[in-house]
Every structure is written in structure tokens, then in C-alpha cells.
Length: 112
Image (cartoon, rainbow, N blue to C red):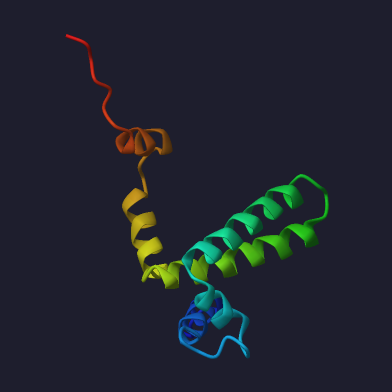
């Protein structure tokens, strides 16, 4: 079975780490550092939310694409991959979202 496009894109993104930032936007992001990459993820997330509030599906697809691209760059910069995300999703499968979130919250301290 052929790799899906997003997995292929993830490989291309990883190949741009350390590449010439004057010839590659992805290399330029890596060179700018994690804070800049995270900022771009935040910007694209906000733009995706704004696009979702309109009736323009093309705009939403475009912004969601930008968000996913920048998220893949951030994951690569952090030494993570789609496989890490897939593993966490599998771990959460079949668990109520409410129960899963409650398990991540600190236990409240009860006064004695």
C-alpha cells in the first residue's frame, strides 16, 4: 500500500531540517526556532477558527491545510511524529472524552 500524502509530507518536512532557509520556507521556519513555529501554529489555528464561522468551505479547507502543515513542522522540531499522535489516539480510543480529560486533571485537595 502506498504511503498517504500526509505521511509523505511529514517526510519532506523532516528532510528540510538543516536545509538552506533562503531556498525553503520549511527550512526558514526551522531556522527561526520553535517559538516562531509555535506562533505560526497559533496564527493558523485562529485563522482556521475564523474561516469555520463563515460559509466558505474553500477558505476553511485552505486554513485547515495551513494549520496542519505548520503543526507537522512543530512536531518535527520537537522530535515527534505522526506516529506519536497515532499512538496517543489509539490509547484514547474507546475512552469517553469526559473521562479521559478528567484523568489528566490534578486531583483536588480536600481540606481536613
